[in-house]
Amino acid sequence: MKHVILFADNERGIRRFIKQELEREGYDIVLTEDGVDTLEMLNRFVVDAVILDEHMPRCSGLEAARQIRQQHPELPIILFTADVDYDGFKSPWIDAVVIKSADLSVLTAAIDKLASSGQNAVLESRALIPATMVATEMKCC
Image 1 (spheres, rainbow, N blue to C red):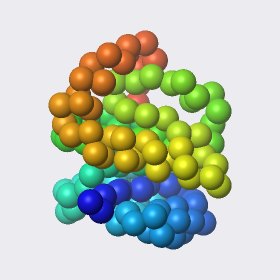
Image 2 (tube, helix red, strand yellow):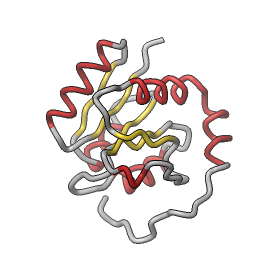
Image 3 (tube, helix red, strand yellow):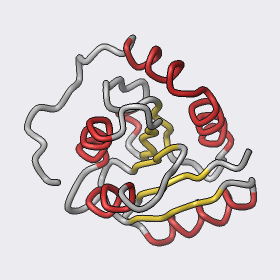
Image 4 (spheres, rainbow, N blue to C red):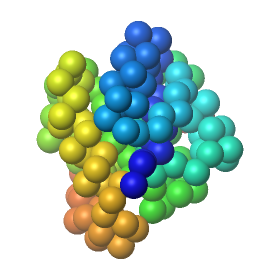
């Protein structure tokens, strides 16, 4: 089955690279450049997963994930970031963290696992994530 992925990153070059490479792997890609546009696109498209950069203007990836989780609790969300401080990061709003790399094998494995797992598996795994690093003052979207 071909997965439809919404990918958000404020850097045009990264958006182009991800779109090209993931389409080559057989995914359909919808691109946005920040969290606000991502939330708007989710009202227009049905997607199988969302991939968010953390550092974006107008609305960070974590704030967008929080709002997506409220509106679409079953939708898998991957945080795709160059910030290695997020390696091992846990949040009730995201299902996986992937550190940016030109090798997209970790990202595609996360997409396939989450987008194919179905709502119950995703919700069960999310319930096990401790909310120890939840940001409380995000108000950009």
